[in-house]
Length: 346
Image (cartoon, rainbow, N blue to C red; front, side, top):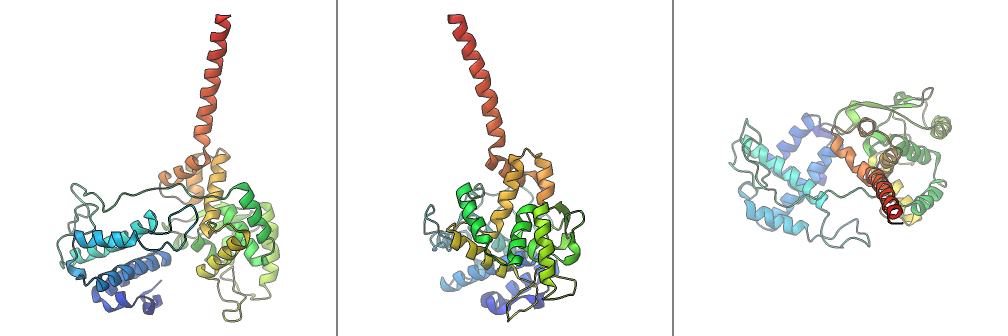
């Protein structure tokens, strides 16, 4: 992604603040992922808009101003509201994501000598020394919830709806689950990334979140579906390149966007009456199933493209594998002990 690709009209506040626009431009030039750039832009736009409404000088904002911003975020209507969650207040992870972008922006202002302290905190930042010294307490606690995955009955409803989808959507759904691809990785696949003879998908480093490429396999059922899709794709385009193409009149034969895929999955979720189902759910479900199948945590991390196994451990916990094994061993030992004591008593 380049600065010319940024839709600046979507971020009028960022565009009107010279330092904010320069900072976002730098992130593009540093070759950050497109999704990361867009997340930073949305977060910074929201923060600058808040400061404008509250008449806060962005360059002089202090800890109290940041606390007011956190309070504001914690009382916004939640766009992905579900019955089990409160209707007010953004999720902890969403607030943390917004604060990360704001913190990085103030890091930039410090590097440029425009202010001395970062009001967001998370360490004492000094130019040339990053976050050296004693780390400060963050603005709010960080909660790390286990990923949500559908129950068997919910999964059955989802599959019934998927069966009615187009061949392109069905193969995208299948590959997304089989290979645990992220949304961007899936939509940016090219024809040359698939090896149908060995049923392998090459995930190019430039399309990944952490810029680490990997090769992952997919199942034989997906291979059959993929072969059928290739025959269908030839009706749209015979050129090599982006694998999944749009069939709409407006963007006919153009690469499918992440937003289009999100709309497809949202439509599936609505018709299946499983509103919590998202494109990332397929990744969560695949990795959890691998943990349930007793895959080693390092193998799962390599499959998922995780930089740290700490991220992978979430799926081990979600599968309940370790706890189930420990419980079984403990109960077996306790049972033997009780039988022995009972025999001795008799």
